[in-house]
Length: 93
View 1 (cartoon, one colour):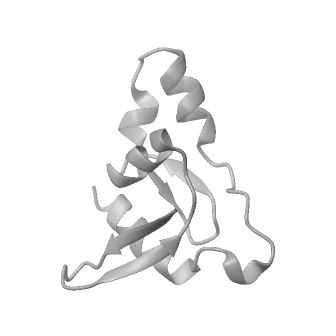
View 2 (view 1 turned 180 degrees about the vertical axis):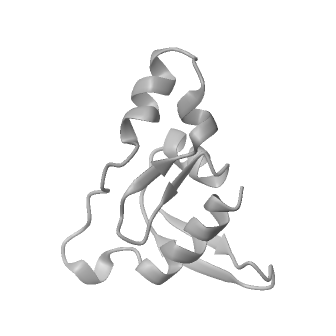
């Protein structure tokens, strides 16, 4: 599954090749989680501070500061420059 990432100027899109389950896809779209250009996942601070049971703990919180599994060959990995752009949007929320 690929993500279309809207540019900050909002007039064109980038494609980030990344595969996520439905839960993590929704969290990524809602900016609950971001993926840094070095492929490390960050969960938004207010989400980390939330107390809401095992799904939040095991479904999101435990991913914080973990690196995503990259495909082989490397050329299929998400583009770090595009991740950086999307991560900037994540940080701005």
